[in-house]
Image (cartoon, one colour):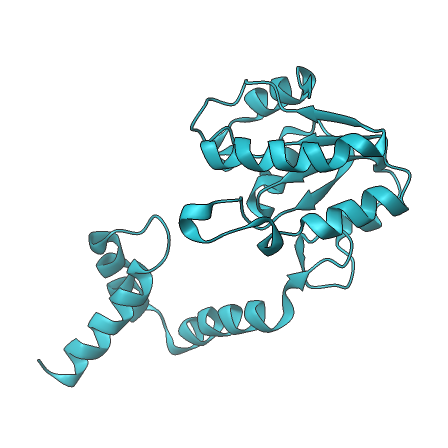
Length: 199
């Protein structure tokens, strides 16, 4: 195999390592990259490098941001008494699209999954408990996906929050069981928030 073919194969393998990208799509993307001008290719590469260097977790909610505190936490118009707990920053985008939630968020960065070696200590649960103890929080909405791992994580967190004398609620099942929040449409998310249940 020529050095050019090896280089292209390595590029395709990098795309294939991304979630949701199969081998055919990876090769298509690799060939597309070759059609970019040198400037476009540099901008693409620099965007990835800058994202890696500058984006980190918000010191309050653990959402991804390029500032010390994310825009949502800084927004004075948000209701800081209600925290919506989500699995990842992608879920926040889905909620914000629905325009049905004016509270703030807390990102766990995963779900409890013993099979994958992920325990509560790997998630940002400790930071959530600190917020509830130190801020005037009245309700925590557990908005993890309705999967086995999502349910287990929600139950674990609800047990920790129950003694703190706040409302702990769960999204209503407008979200299909086994579904992912990031793929839910605006109306489904809006109804799920509206019909959430106390735990």
